[in-house]
Amino acid sequence: MERRLSEPRPEYLVLGLLKPGPDHGYRLYQTFERHLGTVWHLSQPQFYATLKRLAAKGWIAESPRAETSGRQNYALTEAGEQRFMQWLASDCVSSARVIRLEFISRLFFADFLGAPPSGQLVRSQIIAVQNEIIKHHGLLSRLPPSDKYNAMSLDFRLSQLTALQNWLGSL
Image 1: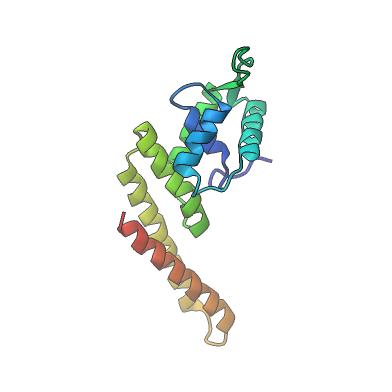
Image 2 (image 1 turned 60 degrees about the vertical axis):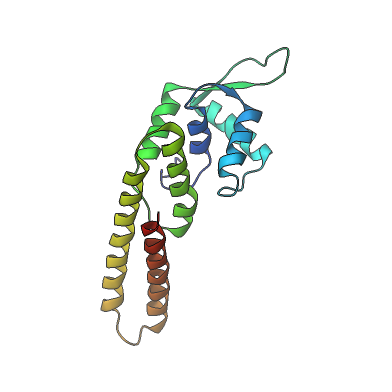
């Protein structure tokens, strides 16, 4: 079963790193570590396993290992490029975890690849968070006074969303 696009998954990072052109796994991993290594916690074996999964899906193509270096090169396929661009342009989600992982990654790729404009991504994310705040205020206002624990949960979520909104406004 295919997961939703909004679920954080490292496959899109690898696809984006291959968008400029073919490269070998180790250099891809180095680029990932340099730019997104503190955003995502992905070991080198996990990174290589991701490459294998993408090849099995047909989203990247493996070339034969180079005789001189022994390195495996990878290239983005048309299906992989379409999937990456679909992820890059997909609707924003207001989960703090998704924002920390995917939103920041999308901003990186907007700069790394030159599209879509990062300002547009930020505005879209702010709107998504504002809509969630409105929704949660509505839910909270409809709770009876005796529903203490559901109110606490909604209040906690509103605090998170407000902090996200403030952070996004500072970008």
